Amino acid sequence: MNRLFNVHFTLFDSLRIDYYISRMDFLFMLLARFLEALFAIGALGSLGVLLVSFVEDIETLFDMEDSSHT
Image: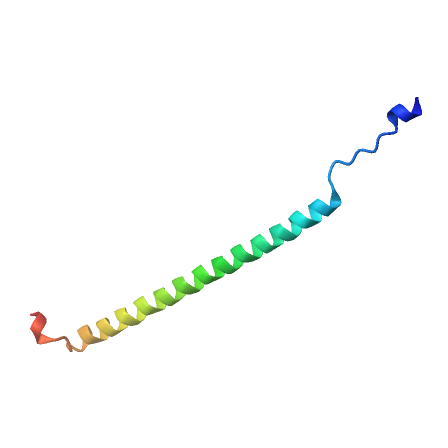
């Protein structure tokens, strides 16, 4: 009767869990780098817009615009 209940049952294989954890770590690292790149691109784009707006505002304030536009 003991042989009937002597079943070795594993819910998860630890080697597979380690493999998938390492894959998830790699995926999260890639996603974090992607978000950092998007943030850097957005920051550079915003800086460009600020510089262009600043130059246009200075031209407007000191009336340095081209006369061909009027």
